Length: 610
Image 1 (cartoon, helix red, strand yellow):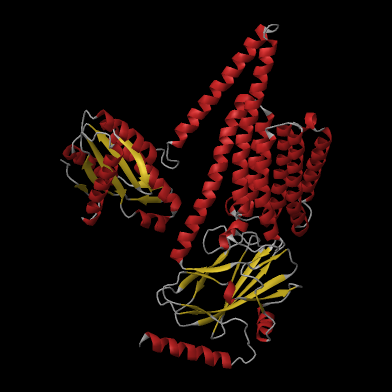
Image 2 (cartoon, rainbow, N blue to C red; image 1 turned 135 degrees about the vertical axis):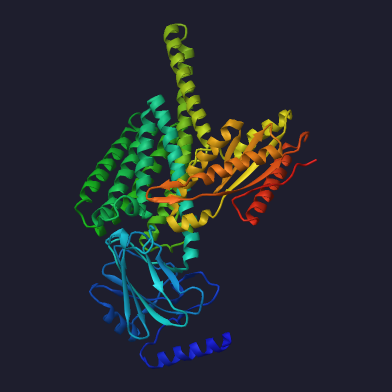
């Protein structure tokens, strides 16, 4: 049957079904899923109703929907703020995508208490799924931080989708449909962004931990407290706490939000007190900060007993109050001549902007967009980076002040000056060691421990500049690695990458190879003093070593093979070392693809350049 005839027949079917239900005067048309679509936002097709009492069931919701009491969403963000009762959402779905009968419905907000999804088919059958953080995490269709539900949408069928959400948290219900592939890509990108954010936090944490252990400055300790507490806040708000820390505890899912906010507020105020030296520079302001710390501590204790709908809005508003007060204290201290307060004030301005947008979204004042949803992450990352710089500036200012005092007292306290200078040199030496350790860690791949791609190029350029012997490249790619992730999961995939890195390193170590993770499941090795044919024999030994025994990850045993491309770099390249490396990597990569085209699990040479 032609595609146009199929579509006409389906639309006639839908029109007939609609005529049988004369009162189903929907304010939105059905969502027709066409071939080629993989991701759809439901907001333009969803109607909603606020059940203030929260006691209506599906039958009552259907009656209300047929009576036309459902209304279009007030905005595409589906954010209503803190509301009592329950919200019902309805959309009619028609799947015309013949290749995608399985879809995933995702509520892209992590803190809803109860989410019930009903699918009513044309024959009257109803399928029910539940989710939210008052249901165990394991009931979710896919292990993911946002509530998600698997939908079976056979091509050509029309279904009515009803979603009921009841929560003491902010009522935010952005709904989207994904194919399994589209969801995988979306979740990968989202997890990467979150990983980058927490990577920044961890780097700042360990960097300043070294400084605190070295310098014993209380400001560094309270900065670490602030980073840790606020990282816990976002870990909770992003749904990661429920996913990884308390997947079966509805009580902790509720209490962790206001409690972590209060801890972060305490850390913020205490850090500001010590950094701005409020007890000495503004005693009255110091008493206000102490009063706020006391209030936040009491609120955190009270949140263990107060209902979530009471404690969380208070804590959310308290964030704005706390940050505004820190800004006021910074301005006062800055006007009194304390120069480090400039960077400090700029840092909190970034944080205030991001926090304000996030809080206004929670109360339904601003729409839920990328910048308003992730503004607090962006603002806090900038704030913490600037605060780290401000701490360094403050330390430098203190050091300069100490040197001034030393110079003035030199005639009378020479012995004291020598002692202080020695202590300062020791601190600077430890600081340089800390920088060296951090620099070394930045040259390593976090998963496999091998050198990263940037460091590999730097070392290879040094080898080529000597120009006294040939150099060959091995480009190594693990075969069918995506299927390992798909079949066993990414944790098993990570174990396989680590196992492969160890095997490659043990095999190539006798040849003094320069080895790095090139990206994904791809590795690269440089073999100094070795021509292309010798390198190909080494590559064959490596291929056999990988193939000799499987990788074991928990209960899983995974066979791994690799395709390897070999290329010898030209000698006598002069000053164009970077271009020579790029060309050599390209040739090795072409040889690798030839190995893959030749059936994988083999070694192919690109040939030596003249």
